[in-house]
Image (cartoon, rainbow, N blue to C red; front, top):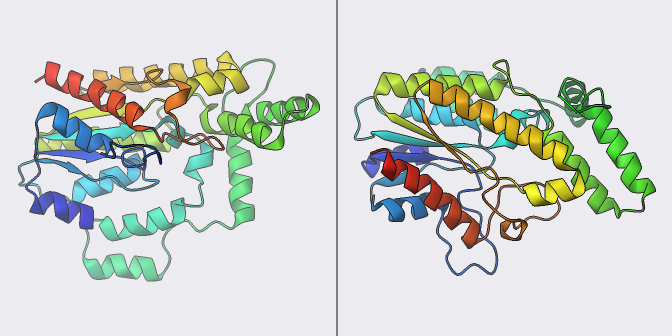
Length: 294
């Protein structure tokens, strides 16, 4: 709500919806600007407002956007698309419960009703055991290339083969995280796709231009640890998102494959956290397409 209010107070014309990719920096960075700020500087747009918050996804973005006044100066919404957010590992994340509590309070309903929903715990509350069960259940539905029946089978086989080959356990865990975070086939039943569809509809209703940008993931490390087949699944899903939303009238900036391994700051879990060079490359790509389509 603070971020929504700040966009109102600053009379924002462009809003930027994102997660920690926007503001995460490397220790050695001398340029510590967020991606949003870099885009704004590239465009010369002082009234571009950051509405980024850690671990958020398209469902949260929709609720934040919907709380903005219908009468405002906003003409463009820039929405981050994180490909990890489409898989069970994120959908059933430990962070989803606090996010759902925030979403309850963002709903356009009487405040007392929202508070009552919070008190009566009208949001998902999974124990660690339940969460693990849900993740495994959905991994068995997520896609994998032959000879694996599903992403769960691929995950288990990868762990066994790398352990047998003598890989350190942290490297085995990282390779398996890549499978859990990206091995899926995209379709319209995915909850994140449904969230993005609602964002498209909201932007149409408000008369806002919608710019989606697909974050780059560490394809170099992914290919090295798991293989090119997983990179291909990731790219296929990116093309699905791009085609679907361009057909709906959105501008889609597909930054997949944009960044080398050296620009990723996290080494023990797949994240979209970049050095200043990585953030600037992403920002320049977004700004270039926004500028070309004015």
